[in-house]
Image (tube, rainbow, N blue to C red; front, side, top):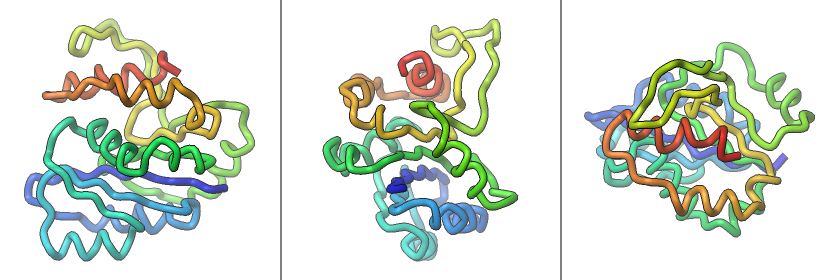
Length: 183
């Protein structure tokens, strides 16, 4: 399985906590390539830690939250390069763990007949974020897109039309709440 993981990090001081290299090391056996995208600052020590645990490190201005970082990395690779992968994982620093090897999870999902999946599903709530109703959706801290989506015009269109979030509510509304119904 040729899998690319794009992993997003933000820390206002540019510090990479110990759980981050642990996470990256745990997923490395299941990913052909790991690209870490940092929004904002990164200390020299943290840069060394990340470089030792990923194939590519992108440090960018702190704009657009996680979806801005994912979009930056996808455009850095290019849509044609992304099509070469069987899966694209978008994950971020808000996820701790894993508690056990991800092998069983990947074995099950590699054999499933779905186009994308995530670790948790958020239930519908009678509330809104930035004017968008919170319906049932896959949470955006870990989403795996399979080849069918990566090869689709819809994937390119999704990222090209993604609005840049300027606050947390927009970040959730423009990306997390959009992804599940979009695909």
